Image (cartoon, rainbow, N blue to C red; front, side):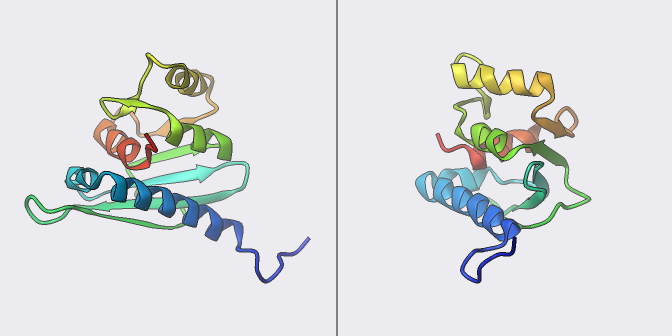
Length: 143
């Protein structure tokens, strides 16, 4: 089954979804861009759709907001790689945060923790790059 001309490719649709989420969150809470203080990258892989995007975080000048870029594909040098099905990635973005990590005091936070424990959501580099995980969570969190 081919794509109709008006349908975007899955890679483009996934990138646009993540870019829209990041843009909306930075517009709603511009102070989040000030927290981008290191040059780092994180890749999100939707395993069921076989698509990936990379979020690059680039720091601004001293006390200036950083820049967040979203592009297609997985960056082999990304500090963290989050792998999950599409629904798992969306649930991760919808989970309330506490200290920029999923809030275990909420039902949604416990559900995400359960998915991490069961391996339905895998975060490569989570222990070594916890700061990157926290900044990524802060950028993606819709709450």
